Image (cartoon, rainbow, N blue to C red):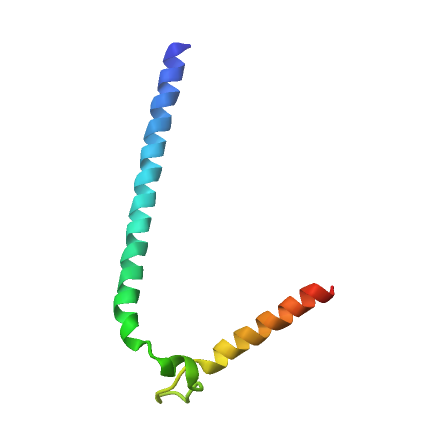
Amino acid sequence: MNRLYAARRRRNQIAMSLSLLATAFGLGWLVLVLGALLWEGFSGLSLAVFTEMTPPPGSAGGLLNPIMGSLILTVLYRFYIRVS
């Protein structure tokens, strides 16, 4: 009985170690992607991004349309939840 317990415990430790390594590997890649996104992305942020209308392709402009659309949908959803 004791040998069976030791084998199960050893197998559990191996499985836990492999899962921790896989988690660390995945999180490492996510941190690298997030770091690159923040490093490259901050240079593109300005007040114009949030206040100018969305331009045609190839022009400079902002993201006012999608931001306002998200706000409108959020307000409508909240109102719908309260009513029903």
